[in-house]
View 1 (cartoon, helix red, strand yellow):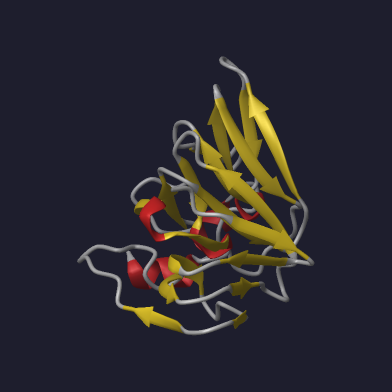
View 2 (cartoon, helix red, strand yellow; view 1 turned 135 degrees about the vertical axis):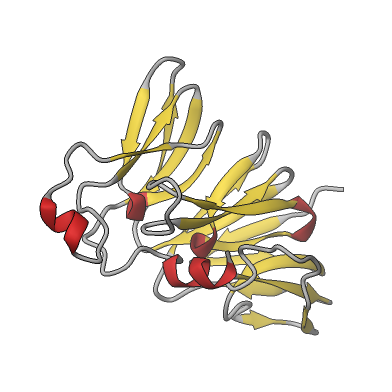
Length: 205
């Protein structure tokens, strides 16, 4: 039986069931909403996603990320964990640290994988769905990445200066390259203070 979600007025509504929700969710609910312990030793997104069991209707929304995107999981979907608002618990398949710099957690993103049903993301900017054809390459700034289907991206930095090596910060021109065929969801880019989910990913990874 398909698990249904409704999106209205910036809220994602779900019924009774078992859900993975972002922190501080649900914003409102009828009946009961109980947080359960997520079982498993290596849950890289444990600090970002909570298991919530609801006995009635629940509404999820984030005032700082008002734009919601419903992504169907006809093919496996990888979503930035810090941007996941709600998804069926049965859809979760795993999580990993996406590292644009090999063997380093600098600028890494915690990513959750969903293999069935759907996932709803919440972003600060509007989300664009981009289809990348076979043989094409799409480059996305790390802070703009929301989700994708297909192979994992590769890190790309066209130029690294001396300051990038000496200073304890992420290279400013670091990006992810997606090689088609794949589908990518991206939001508006901005100058990041720190990449979403970086500290939580370091604690959880």
